Every structure is written in C-alpha cells, then in structure tokens.
Image (cartoon, rainbow, N blue to C red; front, side):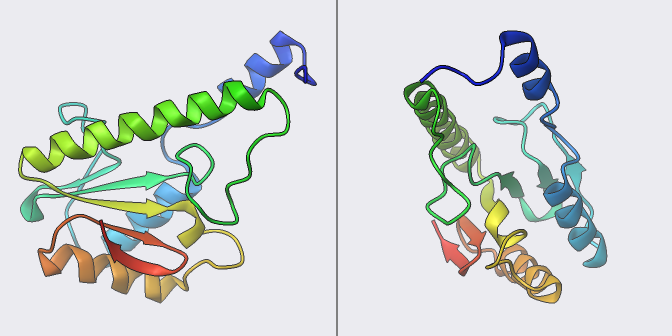
Length: 155
C-alpha cells in the first residue's frame, strides 16, 4: 500500500520525532533526581549513546519506545502502510540494540531497558512504583534487566 502522505509531508512528520528529552526520558530523569543519583545524559563515548549513565553504579539505562524497538505489548502495532519497509527498519533497530547491549556488557556495564509501556498506556506503573523499581535495579548490582508494564525482569 502506498504512503498516505507525499514525501515532503512524510519528511516533516519524521523530523518532528524527538531523539532526546522525550516525555518518557524526562520522567526517568525526574525519578533518578528524586533518588538523588548522579547521571549523565546520552554519553556519546559509549556504545549506543545511552539515555542515562550512572557511572558510580556502572549502570546504563536505555528508554525504548515500544514501536521503534518492537516490544511485545499493546503499544506495538505493526504499521498498516509500507509494512515491509517499517518491519525491516524496526528489525534493524532491534539488532542494533542487541549489539550495543552486548558491547556495553562486555565493557563491564549493567544495562537496564525501560520500555515506554511502563510509563504510558493502560498498564503503566504508578509513579512511586517506577521510582522503587529503578532504585531496586540500580542498587541490587544484579545483571542486565528491563522494566515494562509487567514489572522488572532480568535479561
């Protein structure tokens, strides 16, 4: 099926998608600030330019949109138009994410993925619950993990 927008409109729409300081990233930053944890934002020197780096804990946090990184939750719906193109693009994102996580882990970092569904939608976590889950993972010094609408999991 053809795109419903002409190339100029599609280009304008795609440029409007933020790559930093998104609403969900701002919520994570507020939670980390509430926990009084020092962090850096989008450190370009690390693989994948992590959203948050907590150097004192050797911890990395990525905030992933459920659509762009294919999370198996109600917020991911395959596109109706140009389906093959978008699914190939999303597959590339997932493979790139896996490479970055493997590299960071090999370099001695613990990696946490915070999925958009933990912060938006019907299944989102309560604000206090999000803060406690972040604190639990950061302070536990456990391995890689993820937080989604179902809670915190080891990866």
